[in-house]
Amino acid sequence: MEKLNKDLLHCYKDQLSAIRTFHRTLSIMGLIKNDLIIEKGSTPLFAPKLVELVSDIFNEDILTKSRKLNIVFARKAAAYILKKYTTLSLKEIAPFIGVNDHTTVLYNIKTAIDLMETENWYKLKIQEIEENIKDYNTFVQKS
Image 1 (tube, rainbow, N blue to C red):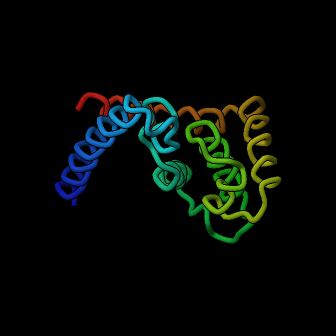
Image 2 (image 1 turned 90 degrees about the horizontal axis):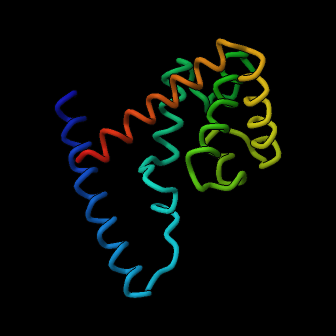
């Protein structure tokens, strides 16, 4: 399984490099001005991968229809991370965290920010998620 994961990551890095080269070429030629997949700087992460990371850190399935406190905290963290690290709108984030409305996503983001200010354990979880994202970005950019 680990070899398969390494092979998939290697393939991903090769494809990402080709896509970035292609994107630069199209930009230079003036054929495109904006590409939402590459727009967010050097962060090659996509929403499902971020949600999976948050689920792993909180050890909960975010999409479970439950009001269990751990799942609620994980859902809030996922909303915050998705907004911070992707170009997705609030409406686009909603299905990734198992809610129906953009206002719920906004509420979850604000609550996550409040929790980080008041609850040290929650802040540490978010920092752990962000360290994993940073480590992943460093690994992908080296190739």
